Amino acid sequence: MFVARNSDGQLLKIPIPVHYLYVFVAGALIGMFTITGIAGSYTRMLAKTLRFNQLREEKDSLAKNYNHLEKVTKEKDVQVASLGSIANEVSTLYGLKPEPMLEAAPQDGVGEKRFTSSLDQFYALRTSAMSGVATTAIDFGTRNATLDDWMKLASAPSLWPIEGRIMSAFGERQDPFNGEGAFHRGVDISGGYGQAILAPADGVVEEAESHNGYGKTVVINHGYGYSTLFGHMSGFAVTVGQHVQRGDVIGYVGQTGRSTGPHVHYEVRINDVPVNPHKYMRITTGSPDFVRAD
Image (cartoon, rainbow, N blue to C red):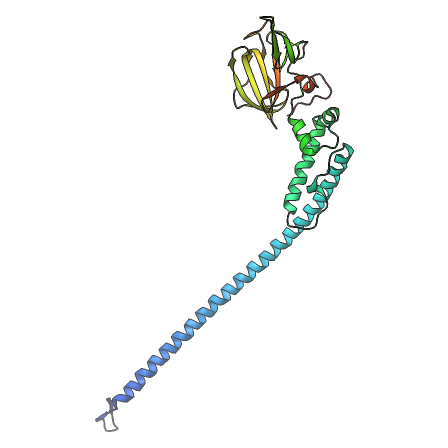
């Protein structure tokens, strides 16, 4: 009911049907829901716009990264071709077999592998040349070999452990103590008591202890199946597990164990089988081919 006054100041009561109120309330609710829906739609639109902008930025970033990677890939392909050419020229010069990973090949998704392999082999060739392994390989008669063969030669002992006279060679000999025939597993090199004994190649010390017969002994693992043994030392300069480089001092000449005088008993082993060390004793510290592996 609405209450109002007429011109005479009297109160007037005007009844309004209840269903009009229902219509009014319904209209208010509809308006509220409409406004809420519009607000929700606007919010969703804003969210979609932000997401779209974010995706567009990501797309632009990916495009830039792709272009950068494409450029890097092209540069690496050029480097691979250059390194491959250099490595093959050097390999041909020294009679090495062609390396498959350095030969021309279609784009097969192994560019990174070819690049890494080319670098490894290029550096291996450079290291081999600088350390005199190329000369050693030719001396050994390894024509038509592979770079892996050169790597094995790089691991092979090549330095005299001490400079001295060979007192006893590898092979059958007469035992100096009982006069009976015996097989000598290495060579005996004479030296002054306390003279430094040098590592003939890079490696890891596997043993540094006393043995019956050998006395104070050092064993070095050079990799690729190569190992060396040094006996009759007066003292150690290395410990087990230590990495040594060609030319490092590993111990000192003595006469511990079964020894007739100061010398070093030197063995070269391939897969634990003693071989003649003389073919591996190619350079001395005074030789122009000697390069300390620093």
